[in-house]
Image (tube, rainbow, N blue to C red; front, side):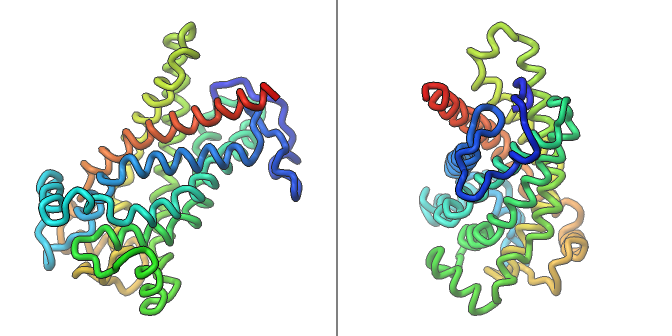
Length: 317
């Protein structure tokens, strides 16, 4: 990562040659190892925090005509009493299918972009932010279709039996464009989210390691987890309104949720504020922050731990 001294890097090494995924990149890792580390981190993060994500979706997608505005505790009680604890995990299969590949793309693009853009200044926050934006644009293209399926399965009274049923019915009834209705909004949301997240993470990690440099190696996972939690909480707070828009675009027309004439972010924002006022744009902010702070800590610590495993393995060879 940025706090470590980079190895020599040539621009021609950015992408491995055909059939040569074993080319060593920076940090002593191969290209495929970044992808595996990112995939593992994404799966662990989303699986661990999935119940909180379900509560966030229920709170954000609900509209007054079909269900009243409720708080976090009321939503939790309603889900558990009506569907049992397993109701909090409805849609986890779709998440698993999308999160692994999406995070593999996310972290590998981030690492390659950061090394390419940093040149002689590996601690440049602007580079970390720009690399994060490039990573999220690429990963969102992979994750958005399965995220749409996940969100629809998480709704109260979802009409879909499972992932396959949801995919087939959406394709038949709405066409493939329905899977990408929220892509533009997702990118608009995740670009600032990722820029804030990565810049905060790298800055917090560097500050924590400078506070106690003599024990930084011993507390490495603690440093990554703490920096990740701070980055996730701040980024989540900044981008909650756009997350509400994304959820409503993905769930439109299902379970009484409003349907919009276009996927325009500004149109959806106007519709939400007309219906709920500006408070409607921060609906679900509590579970969103409760999700992203520990999720980012889990994700970054898992990612760095997996990278360390591969580094030791490469050194032994």
